[in-house]
Amino acid sequence: MLAQVKSAALRGIESYVVRVEVHMGSGIPAFSVVGLAEGAVREGKERVWAALHTSGFSLPPCKITVNLAPADVRKEGSAFDLPLALGLLAGLGRIPLDALSGSAFVGELGLDGTVRPVRGVLSMAEACKQAGLQTLVVPDANAPEGAVMGGLKILGARSLPEVVRHLCGEEVILPLELDAGALLDEGDKAGPDMGEVRGQEHVKRALEVAAAGGHNILLLGPPGSGKTMLARRLPGILPPMTLEEAVEVTRIHSVAGLLAPGEPLLRSRPFRAPHHTVSDGGLVGGGGVPRPGEVSLAHHGVLFLDELPEYRRNVLEALRQPLEDGHIVLARARASLRFPSRFVFVAAMNPCPCGFFGDGSDRCTCDPSTVSRYRARISGPLLDRVDLHVPVRRVPFQALAGPEAKEETSSIRERVREARAKQSERFRGQKGIYSNGHMGVREIRRFCRLSPEVGRSLQRAMDRFGLSARAYHRILKVARTVADLAQSSEIGPFHVSEAIQYRALDRAAPL
Figure 1 (cartoon, rainbow, N blue to C red):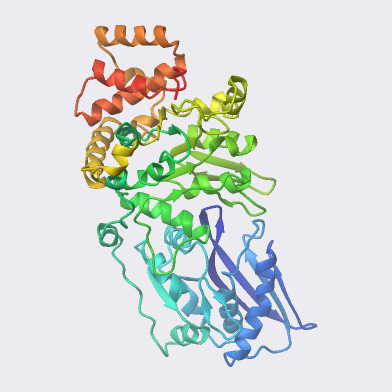
Figure 2 (cartoon, rainbow, N blue to C red):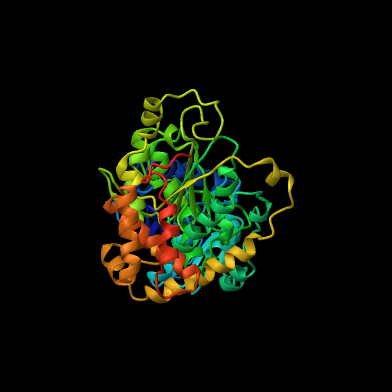
């Protein structure tokens, strides 16, 4: 007897439909799974056998062969348990074969027959929808996540017997309906407020510019000056995610197994802050079956690297492609996978190993050569991809003891939202460009034109500070953002002057 059940598998953050073909025939009793099944898939036959037994179904002594098609693509995970069990029951005649048509099934089985949640249900729902299937049966805990996709009936199952009764017409599992747009409109979670930060007004302004234009930013200052505190407040001033962005971010976190229970759609922009001991695989993704790394988990959000020079050189150099292209390609012997990684990069570092160089005191014990070697840990190509270099000075007592800041996150976010709206209109039809920070040389020449007077002012600044060609393009992009925040269609001298102030390392300015 041959039975076929549709399921889905993950490949990176994408998914594809898999046919689970079950053949039960005469011969020496055996149970084999073929089709490039990885360890967790092969072990599934033991879980399925126990789940069927405890659910009141018995398998006759026969030769069972299960094929996962397409057979030339490796499969991993435990999501094939449920379709495998249903294929066996269909082969035994306990389930009508026509009840399986037009539907796909995913889920891990417990030994007691319960259906347990799996990773990547949102991507699987998208694949089933594109394949023309009408129904996807998933673990009950994953049903809200699958319902986010829309255009597909999502049935949440709690146990194997419940699914069998539904397919036999003895019980009806109602599809779950979810309005993803309304869920997103509920608003994201309130994070730390910028109004809690005392002093550091120039750094707050730099973070506002970074958020408004999608610019990468480097904060340089002594320990205790508030670099980490400020960086953690950057996601709050970024504009709210669109539904498309929220779905994409949710897919990545679901595939990584990081989607919190009861949270079918991520509404807040992610903030990722990996420890400086992270490996290059942990940062950009990898593994035998490649999974997304920190750069992809920060997609449409913020990636924060504190104490930047303490990260290993190979880890920092791995950042160059995602910072430049907005995605990372992991080429392995088995496959080449593409993961999105469009984020705002925020880095923080001390000015020297002891941390007190240039803070106005005599506590620094580092000689100039030591400071130079410390800063040289950050390569030129990586620094080239950072638009703003901002000194963060120690907060004076008067600011700490004074009244709280009057401007809160909400007002800054509104200005950022208005600036981003201008950029969305400007880059309409420009593929892969969503903010000023994404502009290339061609776009800079088109959208960052300077009047002769402003051009001469910039030329004098470049000659005075010895700014490089890369600094020139970064200044123009940042000046375009400063003008957008001022609701100005033209880049004026004050906009360029402010942008020049954000090139502390190029100007070799003391901290």
